[in-house]
Image 1 (tube, rainbow, N blue to C red):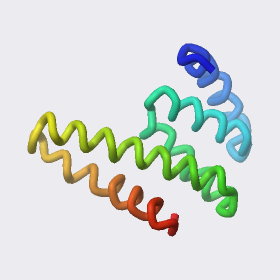
Image 2 (cartoon, rainbow, N blue to C red):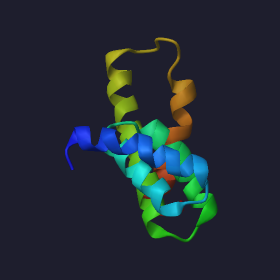
Image 3 (cartoon, helix red, strand yellow):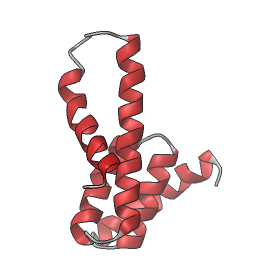
Image 4 (cartoon, rainbow, N blue to C red):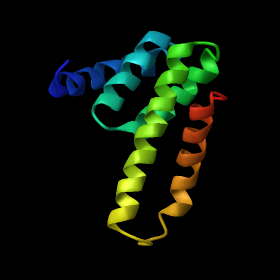
Length: 107
């Protein structure tokens, strides 16, 4: 799917989730669109809820790990560009820690 198609999918998927918060398929599709558009922080919020709703679903775990990995990689690039500006290490630690859990398979 092209990037603009992902953008077009986000509003209708959010509408479905607003109507039916436990709609697993819409939540996963929204997460996928957000990840593909580079909105990993938004995707993580919804993936955590999807994990709460269905903790055994492997696709949710894999998507959550992918989003954390993407954020960790982004943080690494930002850290190299801007050392210590506003102390970004304080907010990034949670993403890096959850990314580590994904790598060792405990998330």
